[in-house]
Amino acid sequence: MRSSLIARLGVALLLAAVPLLQSNAYWVHIFSLALIGVILAFSQQLLVGMAGIVSLGQGAFYGIGAYTAASLAISFHVPFVLAIVAGGLLAGLSSLLLIPIVRLKGSSLAVATLGFAIIVHLVMLNEDWLTGGSIGMIDIPAPTLFGFSLGGEKALYYICLITAAAVFLAFDRIAHSRFGRALTAISQDEEAARASGINIAVYKSKCFLVAAIASGIAGGLYAFHSRYLNPNDFDFQKSIDILIMVVIGGIRSLPGAALGAAIVVLIPELLRASGEFRLLLFGVMVIVFAGAGSKGLSGILVDLVKYIAQHGQRWLLQKPWTARL
Amino acid sequence: MTIDQLVQTTLGGLAIGCIYSLIALGISMIIRATDILHFAQGEMLMIGSMAGLSSFWLQGMPFWLVLLAGVLGGGLVSMLVEVVVYRTLRLRRVSAINIMIATLGVSIVLQNVARLVWGSEPLRYPTLFASGGVKFAGFTVSPQLIWIVLLSGLIMGVLILFFRFTRLGIAMQAAAQDPDVAQLMGISVDRTTTYTFAISGMMAGAAGVLLGSLFFASFNMGFLTGIKAFVAATLGGLGSIAGAMIGGLIFGLIETFSGTLISTAYKDAVGMVVLIAILLFMPTGLLTRGGREV
Image 1 (cartoon, each protein chain N blue to C red):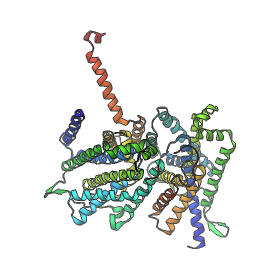
Image 2: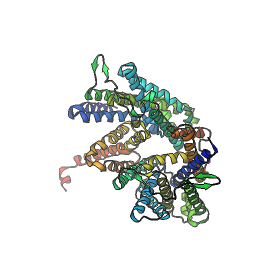
Image 3: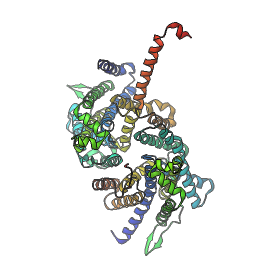
Image 4: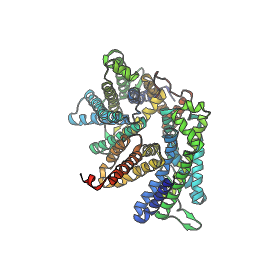
């Protein structure tokens, strides 16, 4: 337990130091985007990793959160923290629309959530009075807190980092709560879970609700991060990207989801030098990582560390003369 | 809406529906045989469309050879992807959701390869059919749409005959129903799976040539069409062959009619609403296949 606490603090410190190590404004901007991706991946991890629900609709909640926060900030000058919270809440509220379809299973549920994402994207694209239509929303004010402007790339990075850390802690608690255990039970065997007195529909709906709130908060952050919203940032492709993050990172763990999000956001940026081949290489990587096994990249890394720990120890414990042989 | 408009819209809906049916059939066949949700099926349509167009550029071939080139292109790429990627993953016992993500990776790769080869601009398809209206039961209709409906119907008919009357077709059905028992009966399940991918790729390739001849060919024409075909297959019942055909036709008709009656901007949304409504009352789609759960 203590070692995991130390590891968490270490990772937090490392992430906090990132803008100091790489102070180029463009890269800090991209790192913030990666942290927003991490929050989205957490929300998908709750659905797919814990409850076994494949959702292809998280991009819709992300968009709802972003547009809500942006409209409140533009039209009513709502402070940014409140606007982001409101984005999360409205996204959560809209997830209640999914209640009728939660009783579907497997691929039918996935395709139904995809349908939901397509509908929400079309609304964003076509309802000019609400979302600015295909032009999108411009002039989103910079976030301010107690009169101080937080519009700089570094300040935004820390806002994203704090939010991502908070979502991580909250979801980590959920994983170890009664609710989390019930979700795991549902993912393993729905009938057995039902027989143990778990109300499947209620738990699945709650799971969608929590995941949608997290995605909505990520959307709110994105609105203040990019300060311009385009409906095509929230199409079904986004939902698919979010699922890719979790699966290549490792379905069963939150750190795995975070790793996957970092890969999906950062690798295309790192590959920018390869020009036309950028997305081609990215596609090949998705195939390779998906084929790496069900534990994902994080699982492979953990195995590697264990292997090195075991064999390194043996190597260190060997007497010098046997090692020489 | 006048009678004439009704006939035109229905024909347009049937034509686009037939194209969805051809792709949805492939998706359903692959799910039956391997339990893979094949998100790259739309890319086979794109490859077929591009292959057909290239053969036209090379030789100025007649229409049926362009169609053949599309069929071969789609079939070959689909088979290649199965042998190189999916079979490797299955041998590694990778879980179903990882294979699904790999299909998305395959889709990204194929799109970008196509962009490198054929460029990112939409390419004009040659007029493959005689333009100008044809009199049909008193209505002037586009011959192109009639050809698409007839050819798709022919392809699907051949597929049904193939499944019912040939040794290979029956072996493929057996392997899809119960791979272990089929293996015991001396059917090579690896081979039937490869053929399943080949045939579904061929149908998607044919759909690509037909769709290209209606609009344009471009590197990103496949993905959204594939997603819609996926919805159509779910509508009809994932894994059911008849369901895929009916689902595709219904989805095409809904899309075209809501495009003319309600609004073009929301024509995709109407299809999705119908999908969700049908799933609410029939959680497994209109027609279900027996046996394993998908």
